[in-house]
Structures are given as structure tokens and as C-alpha cells.
Length: 279
Image 1 (cartoon, rainbow, N blue to C red):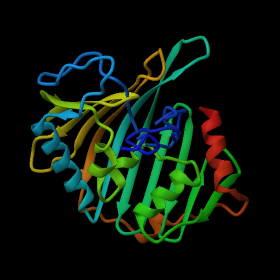
Image 2: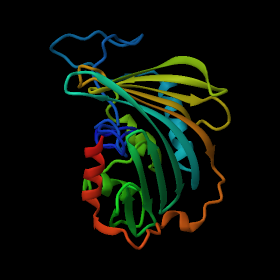
Image 3: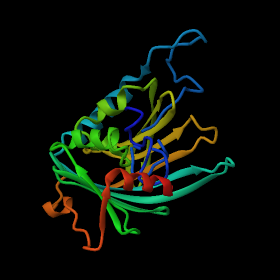
Image 4: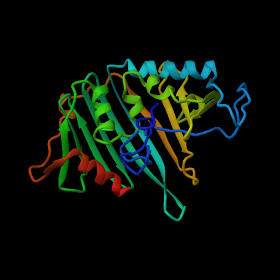
């Protein structure tokens, strides 16, 4: 995963960090150096950087999950999210939100975010991307590439906006998250919302993250937990997934917004920046 577009990266839809760095506004990411070495990891010295060590079982399950989601022509899911916001005093506050996503390849995406710090709506229909804060009389829109992966790259790299959990939306999620992992291993099985899920733990330079993957016939994410190590307060982002549906009936109109006539269109980047400022 790249630091700028991960499950929680840097400017999110709702708080101020990441898929998702910021803390999570409408965004996507994770990272940092391990405090302890996983079993089997080679010892290191202050003068050398050890080669990445990822257990085969952890890598295999991460790859299976990514291939299952990335190859799906369409899906919907919900996520119950909690995230920390660190005040200048160092006090850590926790907020929550619910995110609903509808995706249809090659060019349909709708994201609905409802949380303690406000609501956001995001649409992509193969031609344009639009973002709207229901508490305002403005919306932002911009031209977009005809393919979903290219659109995500544009909004992240050019429009400085990263929807939360973005990494799960690419056609190759494994490529998005695997590149900067330093260590990885399996933590064991647990029950999450009545589902049997297997836990994986990974270490990167700026974040530590865990993901729990359903051990049933659909290897979908059950939960994601990210700890940001570049802040001494160690803020966290957590998402618990539910209601995965890979055969949803999604009307084409879902991906094209219909704004009230009184709304005023302004640059997409302006709306995105104001969303981050609220966090």
C-alpha cells in the first residue's frame, strides 16, 4: 500500500488522517517500525535494515482476500468505523461513523459516510466525480477517467482526496497494500459478528495494522485496525465490515447525483479541503 492511498491513509473523509493519513476524512492507508520481531524474523542491527519477512500463510490469505474482492464485478458493504483525533494538548478523542459503499466495475462507485463529525456523499459514474456535504449549500465536481482504478488515482494524487477504505476498491488490492510491509504473520482465529475470522498482523514504517479475514467461502475482510506510529499518541482507525453482497441490484442512477437546484457548484478540491478542515 502506498502511504497516500491505503485502507486509511492521509486525508480522510471524516477526521483528519487515513484506507484510509490524516486520520480519516473520506480516505484510505497505515505504517511504522516494529517494537518486537515476529517469530522467525532475522535479528537486526542499528546499521542494517532487515529484508521484509512475511509468513507464507499471512501472505497467502491476504492475496486470496484481495483476489476475491478485486475480481468481483460489483459489491456492496457497510463498515462501522471508529477513529481517534489527537488534540494539540495530546488528548486523544474517539469518534465513530458508518460507511456504506456500492461499487460496480468498470466505472460506478457510491460512498455514503455518516458520522459524529458530519456526513459526506461521493459519486463516480465513469465521467465525473462529485462530493457533497449535506450540511452546506455547495457541492464539488470534476471530470474523471472512464475506469475506476484511474479515477481513484486521480482523486488521491491530483484532487487530494482519499475515500476511507480505498484500497479495497482497486481491481488489485494486494498490489495496493503489499509493497511497504516489513513484517507479517498470522495471529489466530476469532469470532467477529458471528463470523469465524483469521487475524493477520503487519508492520510498516509509519503504521502497524491488523486485518481479520473471513475463513468461510467468501474471504472478505471482517475487521481492520490501524495504529499510526508517527504520532506519539498512537491514534487508531478501526473498521468492522458487514453485509457484504456480491450480487446486489444496483440501479445506474445510484452513481449519478441529483442535487437540489439551490446548490452551488464549486471546485472539487475546495469541498474536499473543507471536509478535512472540519475534522
